[in-house]
Amino acid sequence: MPAATSRHDVGLLLLRLGLGMVLLFHGAFKLTHGVGWIEDILTGLGLPTALAYGTYVAELLAPVLVILGVRARLAALVIAVDMGAAIALVLRPRIFSINQGGGGWGIELEALILVAALALSLTGPGGIRVGTRASS
Image 1: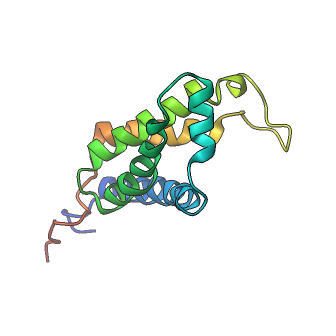
Image 2: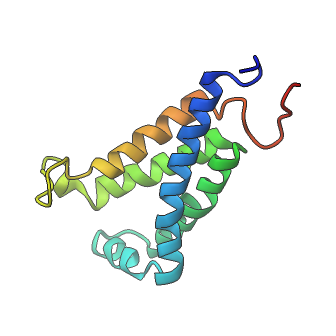
């Protein structure tokens, strides 16, 4: 590989693609089915229902930015905050549980998304991203 495209950059690209694609599917679901169920959860917790619309930013806009590598650190931080809030506010009862449908941690998907987003917010997008030129 040329110096401009290191294995490190390819690894960060794969991290961005994986994180972004997983979240885009979650965001697409919310876009087609709405966030009323999230509003209900927030109401039950005494929080403003307007916060539910932040999931559109965290699960549609932020993943696109992460995939493109544009403002990726900030976008990854938005995703991390979203996942942290989901774990703390909604998934807390599953933190110390095992999935009954085949094993695994009760919050393994959300935890992986959180950790991947935090890692990306610390490392940045790498060299393969929109707005960079490949050297010949």
